[in-house]
Each structure stands twice: as structure tokens, then as C-alpha cells.
Image 1 (cartoon, rainbow, N blue to C red):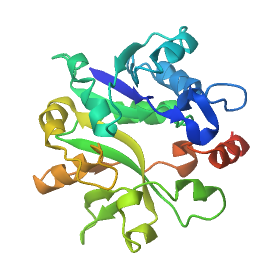
Image 2 (image 1 turned 30 degrees about the horizontal axis):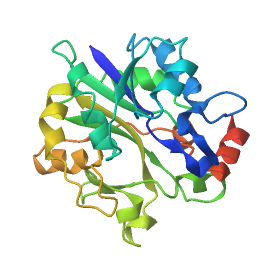
Image 3 (image 1 turned 45 degrees about the horizontal axis):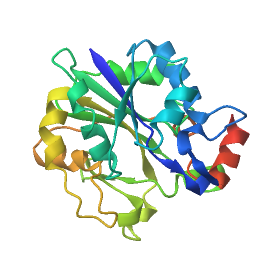
Image 4 (image 1 turned 90 degrees about the horizontal axis):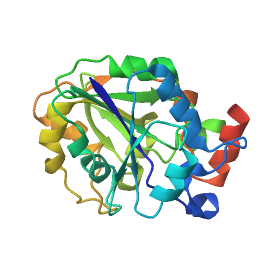
Length: 245
């Protein structure tokens, strides 16, 4: 059984929506998270996805999404993506063998990609990177995402977040889209190994890639087309995304 976790605790301040959760910002007159939820529902992977929200935005999000069958999880403090997923651990019972993590501000993910991700049988984890030729034109939306760092043999060794990246690392054009799929037992065992010794002082879910590599586990990859993985964090990115809808 696969459980889908959708992270949706972020605020919309950078979108100019001070009182509105980011996932409810309108994309073509519709809250952006609804595009993702429609794909999740149609994928038939998880009949009741888990939505991680903050104490402040649970009520408004649950009201807006009342027509969907969802379970809400409160992330009591905003301590990073690793902390957000850890908030859902009590919902991952013995029937669950696979966990897929998605983001509510990435509205273009296709049904087929969700199904492909959910079907993976893995020892540790799989990611969906997107190789770009450059960061020109609409691809500039991806410039501030994390970079995939590979070893001499092409294996994924780690993901470095943009704010922690060196100037040389920022030149890498294979970006982390954020989509991750985990073996549930491996995930629960390693969430407590995450550290917050980074510039943000947060627990990054992406640090599990380095943990997997260092223990000798292969980090699986399924490349995804960049437009499908586009996220929306600012008004500029929203305008670009609307043009691609």
C-alpha cells in the first residue's frame, strides 16, 4: 500500500497573499493545489491522501478542499520538509510499504507520473530530477531549486539546496523537483538522523539522499520533464506558470 503525503504548510507572503496559504493562491482562477489533487485522485494510488498543514492554515485549507477525501496533519512548527514528513509518521501503519511525497505548489504533475512513482519497489528512496539545458526563459523558475550532485560513475550522492550551494554547485543544471518516493520502513528509520546544520536551520528531507548514499543504498531516479515539475513560489513564477497552463 502506498500513502501520498502532500506538503501544504507554507504561507503565501511571497505571492502577495499575506493571509492566504500558498497552495490556495489562484492559478487561472483556481487554487493551485486543486490541480495536483485532481491528478492524485485520478491516479487511484491513495484513496485518502495526507495533507500536512500548519495550525494557522488548517481551517481555511480544509474548508476550500472540503470536496476532497483527505486526512490533515498539523506541522506545529515550520522546521523544514523533513520535519513536515516526520509529522505524518503516526499515519504510516504496518499496511504501508511505500510513501510518496509531493508539494501542493506544484500543480502540473501528471497522473502517469504519480502512478509510476507509486509502483516503485525500493530499498531506500527514489527521486524525480529534471535535467535542464540552462536556466533561460521559463526555466528561470527552476534556478533557486536544489541541485543533484552525482559521483564519478553517475550515481546520485546528495542534493544541495540552493541557499547552501557554492557558486560552482549552482552551475549544475540537473535540478531537484522535490518529488520523492520512499520505502516506508527505511524512511521512518532515518527521519531521526536528519540534522539542521544548514543556513536555514531546517531539517531537509533531501538530506536523506546523502544518508542513503553513505550507507551504500542506490538512490533511484526517474527523470521528469521540467514543465511537469514547475513549482510556484513568487508572483513572477505564477505569471510564467499561467502562460504554460
